[in-house]
Image (tube, rainbow, N blue to C red):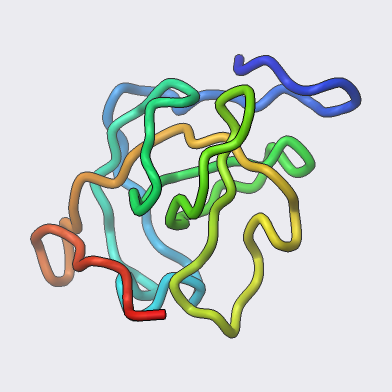
Length: 121
């Protein structure tokens, strides 16, 4: 378990070193889309960089696993995550700091390959 801040619940790590995640929802469009399958490698807290696409959990909602882009690094290994779709705000703006539990390595289907860079702001 990743150590929570006072008053927050523990954030569980990914079950294995590698996982396949299926995207649900439009928050990361156009980078990844609903139904895409992503290859994800487990990471330790604090081992990601701004711009990385990650699987993250929010200590305020540890049951929720999201695919987001790291916007900023915060104290204690936490990250500020944002979706690439500015119209959907189910990210750190709504739930606060997150813990990155995995880094997206690439898309497996339906369009295999590396993910594109973030869209222009």
